[in-house]
Image (cartoon, rainbow, N blue to C red):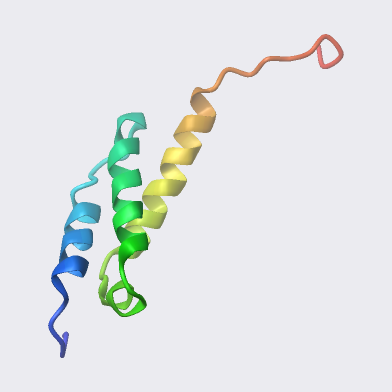
Length: 79
C-alpha cells in the first residue's frame, strides 16, 4: 500500500518498463529509451518506481541475446 502520490515522471517510466513485454533483439530501442528516462529521474523519483528490477532484468536478457547473436570467429591458433 502506497502512502504517497507517485510523480508523473515515475509513472511514465514505470509504464515504459511495463510495456517492454517479452525481450527480443528488437527490444533494444525500447530498453535504451526506458534507461534514459530512468537516468533523468531524481533520486526521489527513482525511489517511487515499482518495477525498476524488470528494467535491469530486461537489460541483462538483451545483453545475453546480443552476445548469443554475434558469430564466434576462431583464430588459427584456437582451432
